[in-house]
Length: 70
Image (cartoon, rainbow, N blue to C red; front, side):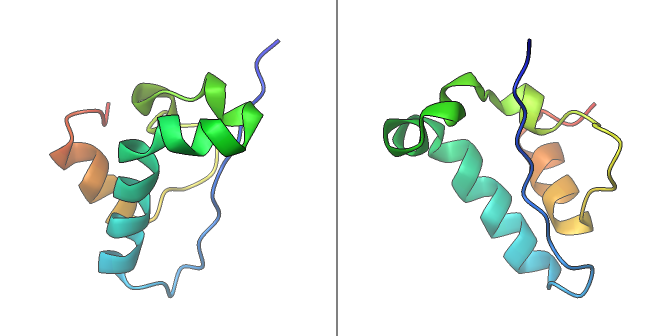
């Protein structure tokens, strides 16, 4: 069984803010997992996987820049 998590952003969130949020999560997965146990299952590729909900354009840009957008 896979436990997933998603961050939800309003469509009006500026692209730069969504980019920085996605970057902060990906670059700090280990730190986040240290204080929030379910985050131990996260990996960058999973975070950028299409789970049915639309992605914010700013997060897509970060995932592409990081080479994890498929």
